[in-house]
Amino acid sequence: MRINPWMRVALACGIALITSVGCSSGAEQNPPGARTVGTYGYEIIPEPNAFHTMHVGPNNSDNVWVALAPRLELDWVAETSFYVPEGPTYDNQGNLYFSPLFPQEDVSLVSLDAATGTRNWAIPGNGSNAGSGAVLILNDPDNPGAQIIYHATYTEAMALKPDGSMIWGPVDTGLTLPAVVQGERSTTHSFGFNYHPQTDSVIGLTLDGKIFAFDRATGAKRATNGQIPGAPAASVEIAFPQNVIDESNALTDMVFGQTPSGLSFWSVIIDVIFGGGSLVTNYFAIDPNTGLIYVAATADDADDGTTDGQSELGAIYSLDLVDDGVGGLEFQVLNSATFEGGTGSTPSVSEDGQRVFVSDNVGNVIALDSELNELWRLDVGEPLAASIAVSPDNDELFAVTRTDVFKLTDNGDSATLDWAAQLEAFTDDPEIEVVFQALTPTITANGIAVSVGGGKSIAGRALMLRVGVGLLDRETGELVSFAEGREESIAVTSVTPQGAICTANSPVRRVSGKALFDELTNDVIGGISCYKPVRNDLLVRDATCAAGARAENAATIADAAPASVNEDILQIQVLIDQSRAALARAVTDQDLDASAADALEADLNAAEANLSIPGLETAAASLLSICNAL
Image (cartoon, rainbow, N blue to C red; front, side):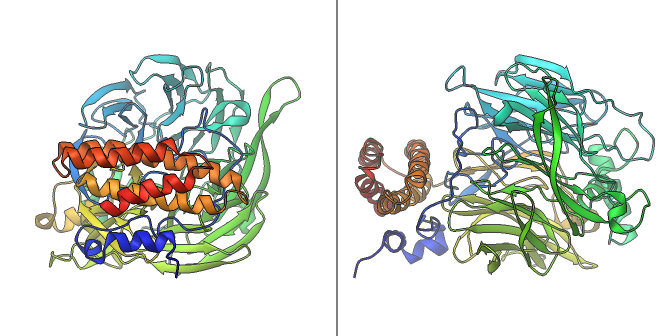
């Protein structure tokens, strides 16, 4: 009987490793067959080897090509005075970027050394707390190997080099900050930039539905500002006891201060999460294949049957930048679809642009075609949170609710719910009554990166006491590794090029946990938390197992699916680069001796030398040799 490459890699890992250190060897993590591919390249859009924007790339797939380190530990926490609701993102020089909420320090963009957390530089703010979302990183096509940082607040846009020097800007977005009204929540938050290849533009979107565009290279205004349709979302009553609300607000007042209008961060963030008063409550997608722009928002006021200045319905819109007839461009809404229950999700687009996914606040994952015709919806049984992670492999999707992580398979005109994750963390703590998912899922080469929280349940709500990050087995949903951290995030499970995780500290559930159970949990903080790979030899194992399995599969479909194989080759090179860097760290940490590392390095070099369609089988053998050795 012939053992297929996935079985061979699984056998090589050994069952004992699964429970002791996590064996997400890439065997089950790289489904066989052709992958979904796009028609765009990576001259300007970076390869998805890390989070280069809010959800990895323009289409918001939450899919990275690197392996997550199967063992992580908390490395550093920095900039703890900031409440950070979005990001972080990374460039290829080892820098991390985030945009905070103040009031302790009025800055709109901060750069840190990703290895140490040391601040590199910061861009001053505008005194309004307008803020922005995740920072966009693009390649500089005029300077191969260099990258450019794109940043947009409500009123300003700019492009910078990694050293903080301006390429263009700050330039005016054309939006005006309204006067601060005491006791009223601002709707002037910017979600930052995304990239529109067809016009070589960077496009920004705001909480109140304003949309703007600038030339990527020069900063010139590309179009008259547009407006997303819809009405402010109807407020949702917060299902917390009043004492929890009061004590949570008092705690964030003490730690972070209040907004310029005198509101507490806890209530503001809860209101944004539940969509109250906003048109748009999350980032937006651009399909790099077609340039279609997808925004999840609210429906027009009258669409819910009542004209009252608010919307009870969610909606998704597709737009494009089109010729305005006088030599310029304008935003044009092309299609829309409405659904019961609002949404806080970011639309996610499949790699080929043929499918768009959004979730609602009722419990449905909704699949639409590129013209926003509904293809199917699947009710997972409880309200969904955040965006849908979309894999290019095997039609797999990953979604989260407030408590669970789910894997789905897109069958074309229907979907199948494959598993709910087994989040068995904090088993040593008698104070932990409930365990629940805590953040968006990220698809990696060797599993699903997640955050897991543990705490108490009050009035049906989970109050967090402890939190960490881990790796799920892609086939079973089992938690194969876990590392406890310091603070909760409401942003993304942001994976670095090294296979580490950094999260934006934005406590909500842990604020309430601390307020009610002060002695059971650490002080609430802001900033950025970074987890580093340990046992880098195991990271080499996982990355080479994933690369080897993918190479062997690609060799079998080279004639039938050449576009898929070419994309596989790009990902395998990323995994080889990651393995080489992890191998050096393993020697430094004394998890491998130099002579053993030299032998593995030789196999990596041999794999790289054969990384072409004719050499895939040879490359696979070299990579799986490393996998088996470790």
